[in-house]
Length: 76
Image (cartoon, rainbow, N blue to C red; front, top):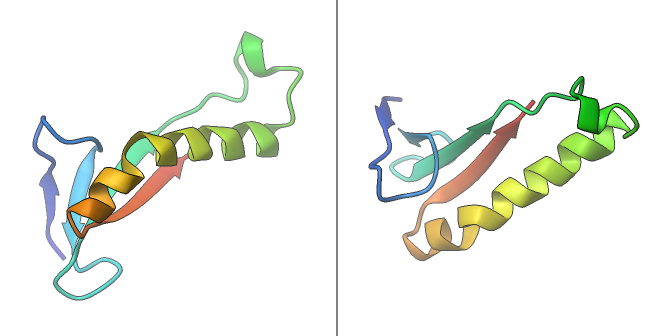
């Protein structure tokens, strides 16, 4: 597997060919969400991270599938 930097005109942070399926690209969108921040202190960390992941999926999942690519958000 070779990792390359994603072109700036596309959403996401990294592209890896062959991660989920041989010969097919997967776009990874990486978000470091702080559950310790002032605005998140009263929220359940698991639910907060799940909502962040859902937001990330909404940004470019459909566009990736139109280009026959997988999309995987990485939120932590």
